[in-house]
Amino acid sequence: MKMRKMIAVLSAATILSAALAAGCGSRLDPSKTAATLDGKEISMGVANFMAQYQAAQTDFYFLSYYGEDMWDSDSGDGTTMTDSVKESVMSTLQEYYLMDAHAADYGVELTEEEKTAITQAASDFLADNTTQALEKMGATQETVEEMLRLYKIRMKMTDAIHAEIDTNVTDEECAQKTFSYVRFDKTSTDDAQTETDDTTADDAQTAADDTTADDADTETDNKPKAEAFLESVGDDLEAAAQAGEYTVLTCSYGDGDLNEDDNTTSMDVEVLKAADKLKEGETADTVIEAENGYYIIRMDSLDDKEAAETKKESILTQRRNDKFSETVEGFKEACEWSINESEWKKVNFDELYTQKAEETTADDGTGADDAAGGTSTDDDAGTADGDDAAGGTSTDDAGTADGDDAAGGTSTDDDAGTGAETGTED
Image (tube, rainbow, N blue to C red):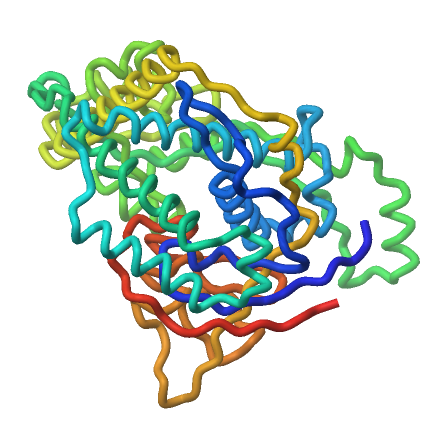
């Protein structure tokens, strides 16, 4: 693939500010229909804007790993990354518009304050990015507002759907026992070492040439090592582990986890069953052998209240996720959805996206929570760390971001940040 021109744009701290664009303007007709949901036409303008935004995120996070050919590379299942992203975008669009269509059923609507915030955020986004960038993304006041509106509706619908779950979790459901353990791999590999202190380089090479692959690596059973450690434990697992430079970890489980099919922990069921035979404070008098290692275990608590609270929240989270998935699938099964393939195939990601880090002086300060993608005093700076960083900052070769609202964000309330700049790279 030819090296393509890239435009770096410094963006504002809006929900979509990380969507930075490059190259020529879009040749798509935004008024055309990209898809139809129950007779409602979804415009190419909105669909393309969402696709280009997703492409920007992908470039930011993966370009440095996969290189400029990544969009045309086989993703492993016979499709390209372009195909995968476009399929994901269409699925998301369907979900967003389904949420919008059913909002009234859940009493969900946007407040006047939320509408005003969306309008302002869209306006700031357009003002803070270059004409060239906006044309590539097909970004207009209307399309940006529509994306923000759909996103906010989806958030409120998610909360409304989650509110329908049964929040009653019995003590039996969330009761947890906790044990500590030190784990040993089943075997270790001893690499053959060449004595060099009294050996010349020629002798060392000869010895290496005479060593077979079987001689070089020897698999050693670690059970004797685990048993020796167990003998050293006594009444203090932590002290023995510290002396032997081992790590003590903990595992919490419930009665249901003792069943192989219902086990929600990452621990082997055989280890859980062995732990379940212990009294509180008791250390197993034998090494527990599992498929993936040897374990020395000590029962810490037969009724871990803190772990039970964590388990309760985990149960509720799973119920929320299940309820949401079931609801969305029900919406999809009941709707008529079609994609206008002749228009949708025109969407491509032939031009790469990148983001230019904001330059600041020593007096400006760095790391503000509401920074426009975070701040940096160097154009080649790496990552950003801001709670509301919209996509974070990166080097000209993409990089990574660290922000609670990164890559899509979850708020339309943030004020816009700095103005936009552009630059070119060959």
